[in-house]
Image 1 (cartoon, rainbow, N blue to C red):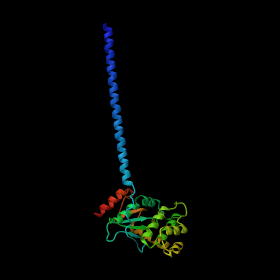
Image 2: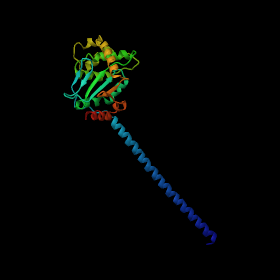
Image 3: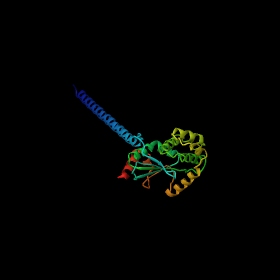
Image 4: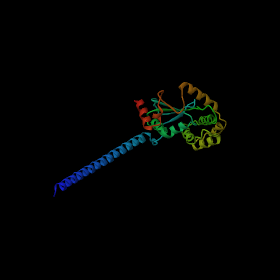
Length: 250
């Protein structure tokens, strides 16, 4: 083999070695990318699971704590002897955000009371200044005041949010309210007349005005624990809500 041929053979071997080295490096990069991608996907999945686990609504417990309708229209839900912490819920039956709070965290409030971890107080008020939302809210709030039994009140409360009308239409009509009362188990013979006449409409407005001024509310829903307002990011996250209330109980 001549010098030219030997030189060519050496160059070929160098090129082959270089090609093999490049291929090996490429395979390493591919493996690295795949591994990094898998780690990233796992991290995203873990983050999503963590977020979902904290925002997932609680399941209903064994039952409800005793519920008492107060003369001013507020409603207390607490086991005997439980006085702290006090969780005040200011809500409007026509308020879409209140409906969402009930959907997401309503069961957490009920469970905390049933477990003896909090005294929960509901304050149904009217915050809207114009019709049809104002009139809708007043009719619903007035009708709720026609229910004296605690368990029936809570069932009616839940039905009002479930059937909340659009903000742009007349809703919570008296015949609907009467029907939902029956569905909630209301047996008081005076309930229908009370709802139809809107007997407690002015009382609902007066109470709403009083509460808005006393509590300096900026809107609904507003939730306070022992008088301190809780951030919306907490009350709309059941796990954080539970942790905050149980922390206040210690």
